[in-house]
Image 1 (spheres, one colour):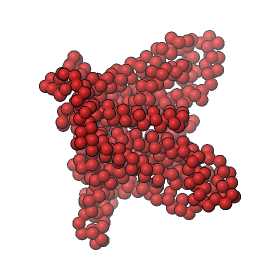
Image 2: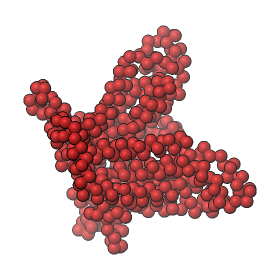
Image 3: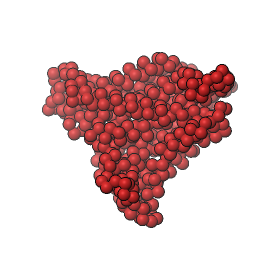
Image 4: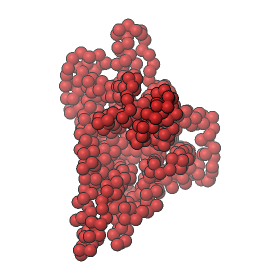
Length: 255
Length: 276
């Protein structure tokens, strides 16, 4: 290890402060008694306000339904896909997965909107929970595949071959040998899919209907309208909630 | 052996084709149509939409997007390089310091932008404090300008710069730096002539990972630029929502995609397989 000079340490402290102090201040002011930017005393009023706001409750519920459904679908599809790609690569499928990762969110969003509107000309359907869920499945599959594939690369294929030699069918070998040993990776992938889904604003706002407003959409509208300490309170809860999920996910990926 | 693989691959192939590739294809088709009465689309086929992308009004937005993304990328590099060096030299606490960088990346971008709005706006914490202690009498305009957008981009994407930089600096042989010192190089000389050249692959990867999302950014310019400092992403969104000119919005999306793909191909080819 080479020495860390004093200015390097000072620089690091500065950058860490830049990264974390704004969020800390946000969290501290969620406990402020006043709605203005001056500290007048500790209070839980804004948390109370969050829990008594029907619009927030509805949107949080929508977000959860969407994120959990999209997570389940994309984890199953993505895990199967990762396994197939691990067996033998498929340039078309991996190409489109990578393309979906590097495509700017706004482009993914407007192209899905154009696609849905085109479908609606032929089908009696409308923008709503279903369209949001499908959109979320589409953009989270790539994340699932990457995480599960990374896990599969540490799995010894000889174990699966042994199962086949001992008379297991392909399906049994996958279900009873491969899947159990990559399970931590699958769970980590699911948590990641959940996180990217529940966080998304750009794509969701384009393909959501009147009955499918999500939590980020409400926060966005509030941030646009002006500052309300209630937003500080929700944000603080989101940060700690997701932080806990990520901690679990990281542990599992290392397991 | 291959039947199971085909069955497993099919759902993903179907989803990606119908919900990602087909929508892109539709955008391609729309970008060649004319704005019209029927669902906002009509004939004849034309390439005029692409011409409009480069007319002065939108050309300026295009230029500004590249400029803001470039400045943000350079700032990320300047802020991130010493930090990555610091982490790579932190011995047993490396992982702790690294997680401290990754942590904000997992936090909703919307929430992180909101935290800055809370600090920077006219009645925000900074202006309120400055006025209270009598340093200023009117609020300083810190939000809704190019500077605010750059700040937001740097804040949002700094982790993408630090991670690949750390990955290359971590593998750097410390003896090389000691050798440079033994041969009489001062710390700054060793940094510029030994460490930076050896970290080049990490720098390239970091530049790609920051510049590309910055170029296509929507939320940061939307909330922190407040309509005064807009980028391509905001124009695309506007064409599909308020302006309702889908053919032009599609053309603009594809130009953005093309820019991203070109950058990726050029930079990834140069850095080999490190990125994907």
